[in-house]
Length: 63
Image 1: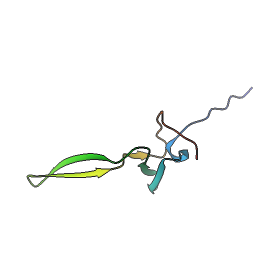
Image 2: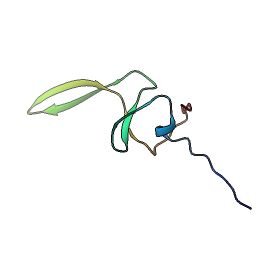
Image 3: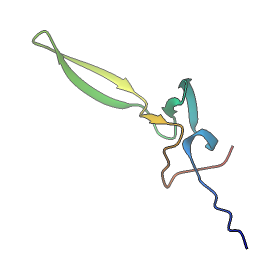
């Protein structure tokens, strides 16, 4: 008897966009604002969350 498991990973999700080998962006929601300090200045950018192709979440939708 064999048991098959199904992994709902980012790489198989309609909302995921690959950006590099094994890495990508989750495009399920709008980009998130992030702030960081560079040479005593605070910078603000908006970015989509970065994920690995093997990551997963509850918002998975198959391609």
